Length: 492
Image 1 (cartoon, rainbow, N blue to C red):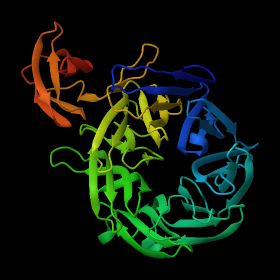
Image 2 (image 1 turned 180 degrees about the horizontal axis):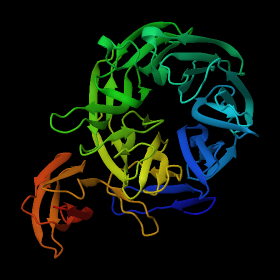
Image 3 (image 1 turned 120 degrees about the vertical axis):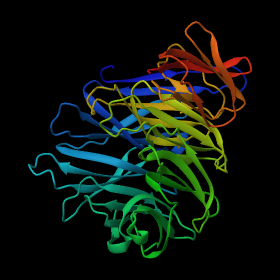
Image 4 (image 1 turned 180 degrees about the vertical axis):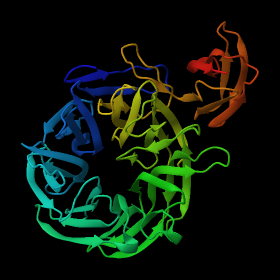
C-alpha cells in the first residue's frame, strides 16, 4: 500500500482483432484511512461521478469525510471534499439533474461529533452544479433515533428530489419531496402492510407515476418477498406487484423503453443436499411484472451477491452490464473473493462473464456503463487477514469488446474468463465459463495431458477421484490459442 496517493495505470493493448482492452485501473490507496467508494453514476459530459467516504482508521469517532469523485472519459480524476467541521457526513446516494440547472443531488446522513450522544442523526440534502460547486444544502432532523438506515434518492420529472428512507431498524418508510431550489415541499409516512425496505426507484408506467422497489411490502401469506409499488406524484400508492420469487436484496432496477424493467439482485436457491446458495441474477419484466427473460450467474460453490449500490446499468439496452461480488463474506470477510462483471444482450443472453481479483477481499459497489459502450467497475479491495477498515478503493474500466484479456506486466490485476472450483478441491472438479466451443485440458506437473474435453455450457463437472493429491495445471484452448490457464490443487 502507498500512503495518501491516487495511483493510476493506463493500459492499452491488443492481442488480436477481438481482444478486450482495459482502458484504465485506478486505485485510491491510503495507509491511515478507510476508503469506501459508494454509489457512482454516469454523469454529465461523459463523466462517471460518485461519492467516496474516507475516515481515519484509528479514529475512535470515525468522522467520515465525503468526497465527490469524478472520472472523465479518459480516466483523469478530480475530486472535492464536502466535509464539515466537527460533523460526520456520509452521503451514499447521488442522482443526476438535467434541464436548465443541471448538476447532481446528493443525499445522506450525519451527526455532530461534538455531542456525547451520537444518536442524534440528521438527514442531509445537497445540490451541486456540473462543476461540483455546492448550490444549496438542507438538513432535516427526525424525532427519533436515525441510524443504520436504507435510503434512495430519485430526480422526479418536474426536477424536484424524491428521497425515500427507512429510519433505524424499522421497515416503515418516509418519502420526502424537495424542490429544485431546496425547499421542503412535503413528506409522507408509510407503515402497516405497505412498509418495507426501499431498494430503488424508477419512473412508472405513466407521466408523474413512480415505481418503488422494496423488500417486505405487502408480503404474501407473511413470507418476506420483494415488491414493486406504484405511486403518483403525491406519493399515494396506486397498486403493487410481487417481484420474482426468491429474489433478494441488494437489488437495483432500470426502466427500459416502454414499460419494461430490468432487475439485478440476488436469487436464493435451496438445494436438497447442500446449504442454500445465493446467485447474482438478472430479470427483464414487462409492465404487469411477468418475467420475459432471466439469467442466473456465478458458479454454485459459494455465496454471490449483487453490487451494493448499483448493480445494473446500460446506455444501449442491447448491451447491459451487471455485476457483484463472488464469494461474498460481508464486511468481516477473511478469504479472497472475486468481482463478477457480465455483459448481456437485450434478451439477457450472456455475451461474457469475467472474474476480477481472487487474491484479496473484494467488494463491488457500483457498475456504470459508459457512453463508449464500456463499463466502469467500482468497489473496495482489502488484504485478506487485515482489519475490516483497512480498505482501498478501485476503479477499473473495460472497453466494449468481448474477447479474451491479457494483463500486462505492470499490472497486478487478475482477470479470468473461467474459474475452477473448489480450489483446493477433492474428487469433483467444476468449471464455470461463458466461453463456447473451447477445450479444457488438465495436466500434471510434467506437462502430461490427463484429460481433454470440449466445453459448450457455462458449468461443467468432472470426476477426478482417480487423481492423487497434488498440484495440477489447466488450460482453456480455442483451437491452438490458450485463452485461460492456472493451477488447481487436489487436497485429498
